Image (cartoon, rainbow, N blue to C red; front, top):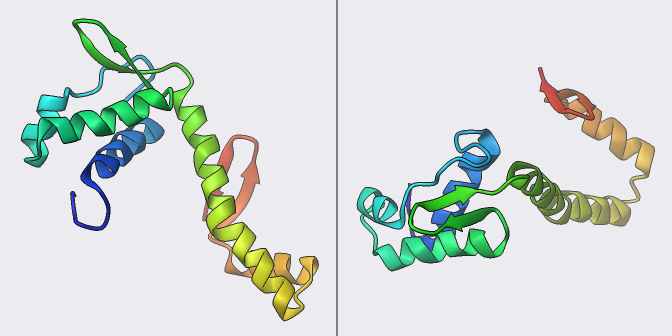
Length: 130
């Protein structure tokens, strides 16, 4: 899973984020130690620690002295908000900009999105897929 596409510590942080977001790591659940990450991915423990510390700085993990790292309360929701913002920045804004350049109005753009339709309904609880 670790590759050369981006810094290893970022990849470690993203792996943990994905596990939190998907529920593999629950709120208040313990996160594997830096040594466990280092051994599993065959990386330097300092690199693993850097990835974990990034998540501590973001408030997604916290340390229980002498015990280890744990998932903070509210971490899944904070990740959902972070990912929604990233989705907006990476996909929606460029899409809207390009649509504007092409003279595509809001209604036409909505029709185009609906015709792509891998998602059939979006409600307050998230998405239901086809």
